[in-house]
Structure formats: structure tokens, C-alpha cells
Length: 235
Image (cartoon, rainbow, N blue to C red):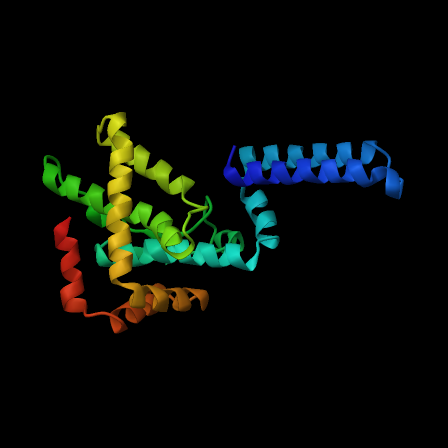
């Protein structure tokens, strides 16, 4: 079950507990909180199995705080900026479950990439290794961005899962996953720290839902493109 579904279950349990405590005061029959909780849990299960948890995500979006929304933008801007400097084409981005639904996408959205152009030919092992390292850095950039801004990361579970799946497909032993994750997060942290001005400008652009091309232009306006593009050659 997805994290959003688990969050909804936690909310249902909390509501049931509070209703049970306040029920005698407001004369609420005991069957009411039980029925409501059962209904919420049933909907969460159906949503997870048949609608990819989009219903839960939409509901949680309604109750997201301003800080949570800002964290999401901070997280996704980290992915965006890192992908830009590492030469990974960006095809779009979404910042809320409603935007994901309107675009007809599956999953929880975020920054989407065109990885087909990065595919190496058979036996080009070095290119495959470099491409994987670039992608790992981009996947960990959201977590790195949150830690820079807030000191901790609340998101990133799906990013870590993507990284582990890619490493598994590449044949890396499982004992090396944590080391590669830390390495990629460090690379992302260094890049974001080096380009704070561009990063802050990108956040403002994404808050206004600027297009990918407009976001590219914002980044270029706040950095020396000729020197900064050389970062990609380190991978």
C-alpha cells in the first residue's frame, strides 16, 4: 500500500479515536465512528488497488499545509535543477495530485524525464555507468534539496525505490545500495549548494507554473552556462 494510503489510514484511526472520546459528550452513537472508519479504510484499499492511489493523493492535497506545498516545490526543483546541469532532458513537471490527474499521468507526478535519449548501445558499459550515476544523482536531489532547506527530508521514498531498482537491474550487489545512495545525495548536495541562486530562481518560476522552457531560461539567466555545463563531464 502506498504512503498516501497509509497516511489516510492514520487519519481515519485518529478520527475514530477522537470521535469515540467526544461521542458521549455530543451523544454520538458508537457505531458512527466505526462505520466512518470502515468506509475510509475500504475506499483507501479500493483506491490503491484500482486507481493507483490517486484518490487518496487528491484528498490529502486538500489538507496539505503551506509548508508541505512549499516542501514539494523545493523537492521537485532539486530534481529539475540537477537534471538540467547533468544533461538529462526534462519533459514536464507536476506539483499537486490535481495537476497529475489533469495531465492524465499515473503515479504521484513530479519532474518527468526523457531517458530514451540516454540509452547506451550494447557493450557501451562506460556510458551506461555514467548515465546511471547521473540518474542516481537526480533521484537523490529532491532529498538533498529538502535537507538543505529544512534539515530533514519528508519525501523521497519513491526516489529511493527508483534508485534501488536501477542498481538492481545494473547488477550492483545489494550491500552497495546504501553507499551509492549516499554518494548520489552528496553529489546532488554539492551541485545545489553551488547553484543556490539558480535554484531559488527556479523555485519561484515553478511556483508560477512556468513551462519547462521558461524554467530553463531562468536557470540560464542566473549562472555562467559555459562553465557550469562542464559539471556534466565529471560523471
